[in-house]
Image: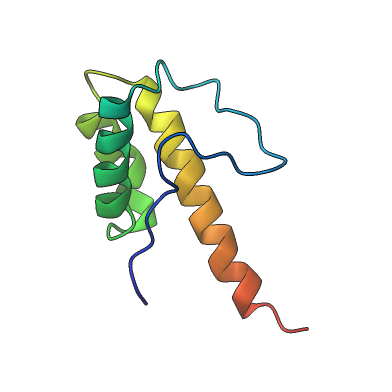
Amino acid sequence: MGKRQPPEFGTHVPGEKANPNVQSEKPGDWSRIKVLFAEAIEIEPAIRPSWLEEKCRDNPGLIGEIKSLLEHDDSSDQFLETPA
């Protein structure tokens, strides 16, 4: 399975609200979110929470954004695996 990347900074997914857990959405934060997301999808889901806490210790607000992206990533996999 290929790696998925989060949408580019400033894009909006119709029907979705901004994540209130993010402290800021500066371009620098978004670059960091993209890198952490790419790393997180390669990590076993059971250890992701502690890994995220360690990686986002200096900006805990990023954890919510990355978790949201991971949830969307997981749900898209399930969508394709669900028989019609």
